[in-house]
Structure formats: structure tokens, C-alpha cells
Length: 84
Image 1 (cartoon, helix red, strand yellow):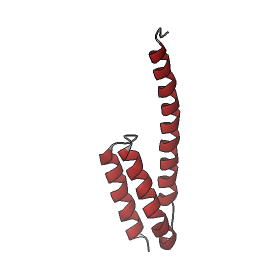
Image 2 (cartoon, one colour):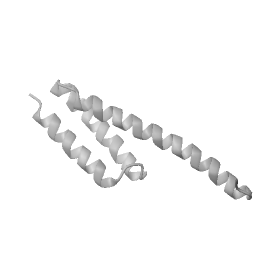
Image 3 (cartoon, one colour):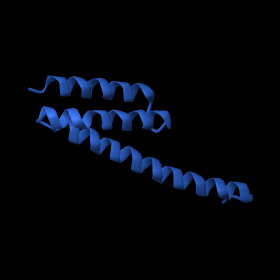
């Protein structure tokens, strides 16, 4: 166990951040899944900017890698554009 006050504080902070990051990541995955399963082009077009913004924020906070965010953005955009 940690002996210093600063180490104890660091443990508390990292636990809070871990839970918060897990929540953000899971909510982003759910949003991507909902968008992928969308069949209506107008509804998908409305959701796309929100999901792209969410992925960009996660990449900026280093919760996901920036290339992963770019790849997901590209694939989702192609999916929405391909809907009839």
C-alpha cells in the first residue's frame, strides 16, 4: 500500500478517471452501434454529426487513439452515404 499522501491521492484520482473513461468509451461504442444498425438515411444523417463529435472528443482526451476515431468516422460516413 502507498505510504505518501500524494500517492494515496494519485490512487484515488486514477480510479475516478478510470471509471469516467470507461463510461465515455462505452457510451461511444453504444452510439456507434446504434448508428450502424440504422436503416433510415435521414435519421442516420441526423445522428452522424453527433457521433463524429463524440469520437473526436474521445480522441482529444486520449480515451481512444486518434487514428481509431478517424477510421470509425470514415466508415460511419461511408455507411450513411450508402444508405438508400
